[in-house]
Length: 410
Image 1 (cartoon, rainbow, N blue to C red):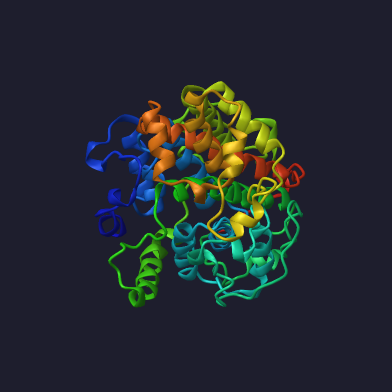
Image 2: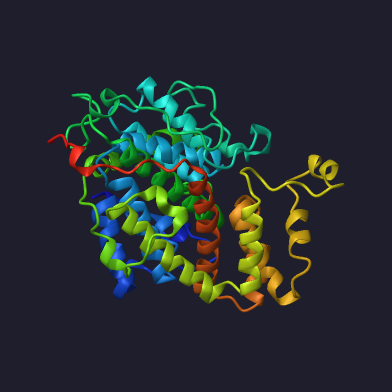
């Protein structure tokens, strides 16, 4: 029912590219769409927007499915806290609306012990001040008072220790979540939550570039938005409470080795999913991102420590009087040939300041010869490159002794 309700008008939410309509989907795109509706419960625009590039679509879905929907170490409600708080930190109001509404529909969403997880999630990447964030995104789910707030933690700080009771209490999270019991489970728990954080650092960038500020149609009156999002959360509740088998998305993409910067994923289906997805998006980058542009973005990310890009010297006063300046990207791309600057501008903005991408940036890429597929492949590569940088800064969990991990029966 949810898929039927939300499918109408879903394609119209996507800007800059034309996604493949579900009825026209064939091959890999059709297989991803079928899994998406079956397992996520709706034809989600953040995934559908990737459809002009089938391999990027499969990679996006694989990371989302295997991190958020699967796994037995962290309950879905804990993962939704991570998704909501990473999205709030990245000033992505669309994802905040979707995942906060889903979170509110899950039992235990207001447990005060989730505050430590929320603080860690907010600190994993960009830490813009309130003054630098777009007004629509300044109040995240915790800031609005629905859950207790807590002091932020430093970027790279280890995940907070979660007592076994927090993840395996009899009535919360809901029965059937497939939680691990007491045992050597810390590495699996950390891997799952880092995977959710990395996935949403990726998705937030793609959503900011290709979607608007809210999943609700613009014609919904402001006073009706709260009730509409509450109803959305209620509709999402059955799908969010279902458990899905890990690894079902893996056949969508060929096997690949796990890169060293993704070692936090450990082993098993989660690591396999991120290995396959990262290989697919690296191939997208090789196809659609010129070598000098890849080198430039890689160099800038190597020096990036989180937060927005620094304002070039002498420009700070001008920026105080208006919207965030793109002078930094103009200076960063100045040494490139003119024909490469549009792609470099879009790639750098997507990776480091996606809220600064506008119609003019995309149109410049179009004039340089990029089509829907190459736009998605370029931005997917830039987004995942930044997200992998975030994940690589998190402490690597110790190996799991699988024989010592127990599962609670639903």
